[in-house]
Image 1 (cartoon, one colour):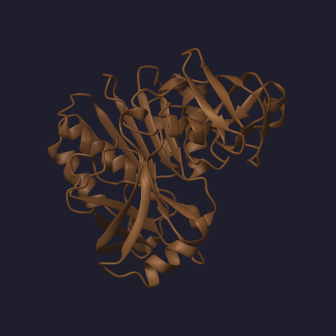
Image 2 (cartoon, helix red, strand yellow):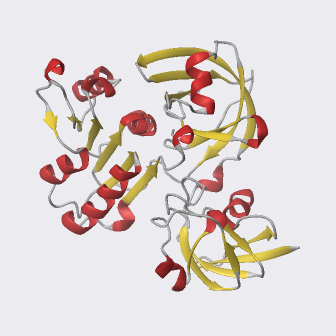
Length: 341
């Protein structure tokens, strides 16, 4: 059985099968519902059920509380319809512009940039290219229908290779293989582009880019794309890590700060040791932003990394710094340990 889903306030409609999630059907139809993790953890796809009935699948309490569910809120990434639906959601323009494809790729290069981080470059088939927006991600297709998600770390115009930043999660099905057995010229299949975290190029607001750990990957793509577009928007990057070595492309960021107009870089370390001889900013990375920018009412923020960093940033930037909530764009690495991008 197939049900009709109507999105308000846009009025757009798409069909959804009885065993399909609302989000999966929207993606298939090219309708731009906001989303991130696709597994009930981040809350990006939360909207309101105006009419119809659904089964709300397994999800994390922080993504959708019982009180919110009672008020008619739903997570569309794990909502299965039982009737025609009318939902309320803020659509993301531009998402349906590029087709989502399943593609083979060859591992072109494996570069260990830190003890626990590898930058992997993927070569696409001849005469094939992947069109995407800076900040989006791909999902590697593994055995037994398992998937692992990684942000693309290069801007779309630099598409000779697709690069991803992979942090080793000990015991992880995919990352143990990458760090232990994967070789150059191996074949990997992936699907993409995915996600609604991408550079909004229709704004002239100054940008705050906030990254923790390998959350730097999509932020890097956004910076490259902004530079390629010769944007005149002021950009400040705050990159946080526990130790200085966690800022594994610090030299590149410093080069951007020297060469890109209107760009500043502020590294922040939360747990440096005496042998690190760290003399830069210390503490939580989102607190450094608050200290520097107590009034963010005229800013646009892109945040990516550990859920605690992203969640704290959104809460405090909106509550303390007057950031408009709709100007906070995020990709929270919310999956199980082995799913971390």
